[in-house]
Length: 276
Image (tube, one colour):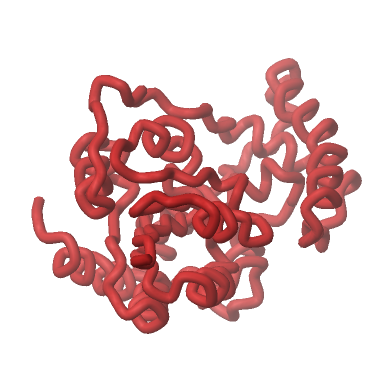
């Protein structure tokens, strides 16, 4: 029996993955879509082993753990075809920072990403995208499809067409809801929870690798976090920090620092997926 063709979308995180997983991927036709909830403990491999479709598509989202997860995928499906979505470095790290603040961390943006000494929470090596593309090509023996978050935002159907074409699948454009999956919290809400987080949450905390333990940790941290996020609308302005959550100058520094890596990725994508 011929080996099935397996496609794997690896994120990155904060590039529209949640939206795609809920509103686009289930609409694909001509391919078996395996949801991210079946990724843990190689459940997707068991599903593929026990079923008889010709092509399969699995989606998850990674960032700092990408290289480890590529090894895991390659150990089961060394010929998998990989899709990755990139977002310009300054926009991407700003979104990562906002997520961390929402989750109860209280460091400043400079403490989160230290471009001078690389002592921040997020290391510079974890923001280099081009080595990710090289690793995918080396591990799987083929070039990944490289797409961009901005195209998803500005030309969603063009983005989806490229995705579907690479998978050899189709979809009904009218069936795909283009509205966001969820709305982000604004800067005022995030600045308020950043103020409240220091006495409440350990800044060295990381969620457990154990699935159910991680679930309980997230639940018990979620209650006070969302209380502060939503109650911030009732807090007088003078009690909320006046300094910007992230300054435009900080984001410009990030963009300039990683501009060569971004150019390499754009060039790579043009070779992989020619077109406007």
